[in-house]
Length: 425
Ligand code: AMP
Ligand code: GLY
Image (tube, rainbow, N blue to C red; front, side, top):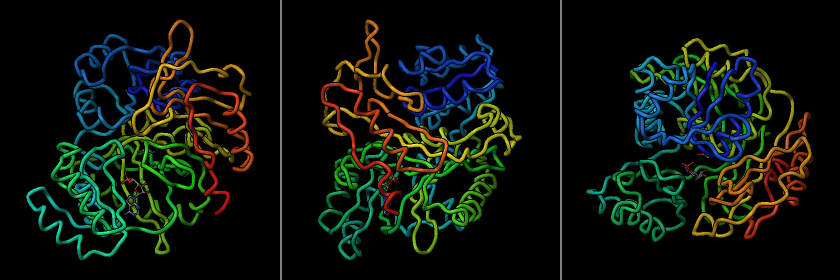
């Protein structure tokens, strides 16, 4: 198969590496890719938002499968355009991608499907005063979320009416998130342990990959601002086999059935961000794509023909037996630029990448190559990922941090406690 992956982050680097292992692969292209993916396939310098250019490329290279990594092109309808032109796509159409693009839509689907999630109430900009009155009476903490896409920044966990009013202002009055903040949800705060589960879906049936846990806050012990993700590990011990069954039966099965019933069948990776509470699993959010950096660890602990799995999903004939958990453990620690998620400097040379053992893979996220040197070029720069063949997160963690010590660039910052929540669980 000739395969095109859309995207340029650590997630796409991990997808490329896993797809590369398939005996069914012929040519692999990554659009636009990053310096890491340039060693695995051919990077293609086309902006995925230029849908006509993507189409022309697919025709020219006789692409058999397009795997769309990020949410933006999905929400823009890239999968729709490709499908209309008879290409096989792993990634949902625009209508089904609304499950991530609109939190209000996701709640409607969950309500109809009777899927456990936090109680909520919705307000629009014209109801600002009503919203203000409502948060004065609310129990705290509560969570306020912009309806639309906000790169992980549209969620506010509020501990007092003052904090809540601040969040309402930011979203509805100052319109910090633009159109994404036309509406918002005020949500019940869920207590428990978070986990991410990915389901590979063909529009009707699905198969789950091993669970994982992201670390969203910038600081150790989950302090400070929310980020795109500072590290992850897989599998997550909080998702016991029994819990996994509950997640499949109470969350994925009814959600996918309801999407199909509403004429929005979901083909691609449905990502459930979950809170494992005393009352069982509840949905915090759905995403319409693989998570980053969870993909880096989840794909490290599966074996089988991943490319063929995605292909069978894309053609609506999912073969659930193509991949399985390999019994191992994986830990990914993100090396970021000091200052992220606020402002930071870039353009620093990264050293130490050639000195790492075989069980470490460094996924590129915000890097660029210049004169054979790899330079920092973003907030999240690298994902240093260890994988070991047995389920021992203590060893996997040690290996990831040992490797991290060898890597250096000016202003490097990383969390020191990735996987500790599992080790203390
Ligand atoms: P989201 O972008 O919706 O995943 O939210 C980002 C983070 O905010 C989540 O990973 C949680 O840590 C936290 N969060 C969001 N919603 C809730 C909720 N209802 N209860 C508790 N924490 C939440
Ligand atoms: N790891 C969080 C996300 O991909 O949205």
